[in-house]
Length: 204
Image (cartoon, rainbow, N blue to C red):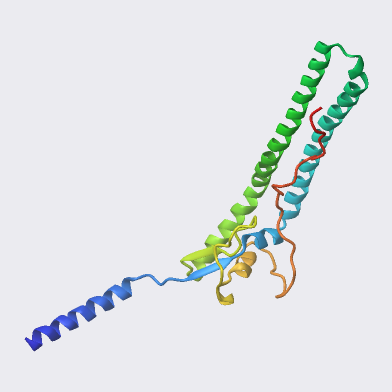
C-alpha cells in the first residue's frame, strides 16, 4: 500500500514537472502610446494638418455666424414695419439658419475626431508594428498601454520600470529616446469639446 502511494506521488510530481516545462513563460510589459506618438517624427505633420483642418472648420462656422448676424440685424431694423406674414417668414429663416449652425458645430466635432483618426492611423500602425517586434524579440506575452488617454482610466495603474518597453519601441522606430526625466509634450489630439465657433445669438 505504501509503495502504491509512493508511486502515485512520484507520478504526480513527474506529471506536474512535465506540465510546468510545457507552460510558456509569462512576461508582461507596458508603454504609453501617447508618449510614443509625441516623439514620433510624423506627429508634427499630423498636428499641423489637424490644426489646418480645424481652422477650415472655424472659417466655415464664422461665415454661417456672420450670415446669421447680418440677417438678424436686418430683421431687427425692419421688424416694426413688416407685415405679419413677412415677419413670420423672416423669423422662420433665422431659426432655420441657427439650427444649421448648431448642426454644423455638432458635425464639426465628429469630423475633427474622424480626421484625427485618419491622420494618426499610419503612425499608430508603425507604433503597433514596433511594439509587436519588441514583444517578440524580448519575450513579452502582453504589452499594455499605461495611459488610455482622453481622461479615461489607464489600462495599467502600476508596473516596474524594468517592464517599461517605451525606449525599446522608440529605438525600433529609429527614434532616440530622450534622457530620463525629460518633459515631452503630449501627442497630437483633437479636443472633443472645442467647437469651431460657439458665439451664436439666441433665437429672436
